[in-house]
Length: 243
Image (tube, rainbow, N blue to C red; front, side, top):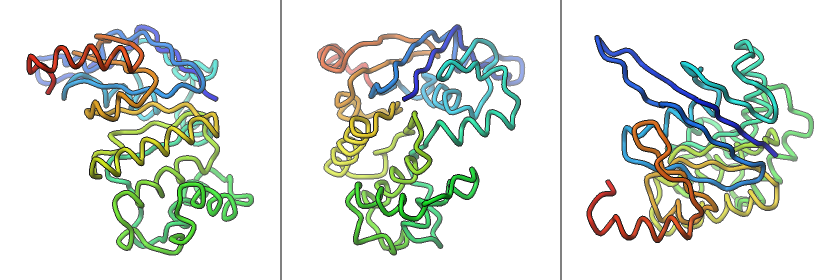
């Protein structure tokens, strides 16, 4: 299981004569095994934060410590190796390869990180876990949106990561399927002991997580348990504040 510590984390971009502070001094600790959502309006810094957590971006300043490893001290090759071993990703648009069937898509990360021992059996077991035992030989265009996201979740777990990052993982499915997808990720969180961090704009999704971190202007606006967050959001939503 993965623990993550962010210390004074920033990510700034130059735009002409202006500096955009996408992330502006984040201090967060996420314990191993947590099921967390990050929410906020467009431009709040949530996607940039996810990309930093996923080691896809380097911060302008500050520190990201993953399972005791200061990732800022790693060269690009070591970062890629750590990403392949420790992290799994679930995307809004599934990112499945159209020419591969479900089991081949799930196995795809094994090709890049040389972790293919018993890979087909592991992929089949994961697809069975996500309810796609009878759909393993189907290509993405033969699967519903919810089924495609189930394949993507299985793919995210194939390398036995300790942390899975979801970027709007329910953004392309209807509300009923969204509930099923979050429920599935919750079950994987509990049964596999994997830490999940989901970026979402959907408060129905966020309120199913154990902890809701709200960002504004690249900073933490609130950090609370979902039940408390739900009460807080209801009060301000009546004022039309939430986008």
